[in-house]
Image 1: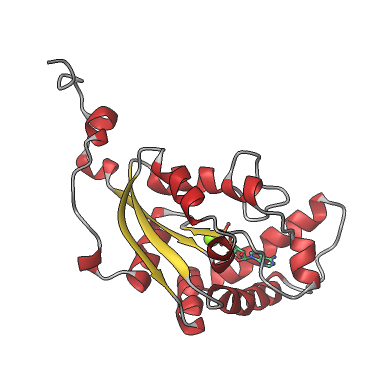
Image 2 (image 1 turned 60 degrees about the vertical axis):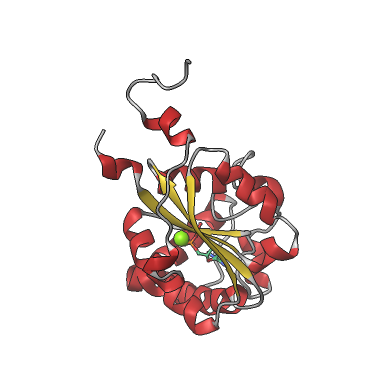
Length: 203
Ligand code: ADP
Ligand code: MG
């Protein structure tokens, strides 16, 4: 197996609601037991500027897409988005997110391993807790919806940020961590996950 396939990085942030709801341990446990490796972790209070930079790594495309995603969710429920354009909704979400993420301490982490981005997204669940799959962090541990968030003009409180793609992770990680904070070490469990021959078990 090509070495780099085992070393994909993804950024996870336990947002302020996750810290306040005393879910830090529960959330970390769910990622940890997959076999992914935790290579960086810090508790910090982000500035709203930092939060804005973080969300804007996706640029104009992100602003447009996030509005589209919300409109589709409204449609599925037979309702109509209150925003005139996708972008208008995107800008409102960016500002709301900056306020949300900087409202208190967060826990930022980097998880490493084969398909780390996809595995973490799968366990985290879809953006809107109301429709996130059962068994996911967002689906199991909280209750918010697009409708409730929009009517209060705030961000959806969904406990977690998780990078959407490896490219997104690459751009987001330097906002939160310096190179020297990302640890390089071996985990015994990796032999079971990745070694070609399981020949180190028997005495
Ligand atoms: P995800 O966090 O699942 O990757 P996005 O990248 O699309 O989702 O959105 C980033 C964050 O912005 C979401 O986690 C959520 O907190 C917030 N958000 C997204 N869409 C909306 C919306 N329509 N209304 C309010 N907040 C939203
Ligand atoms: Mg995202």
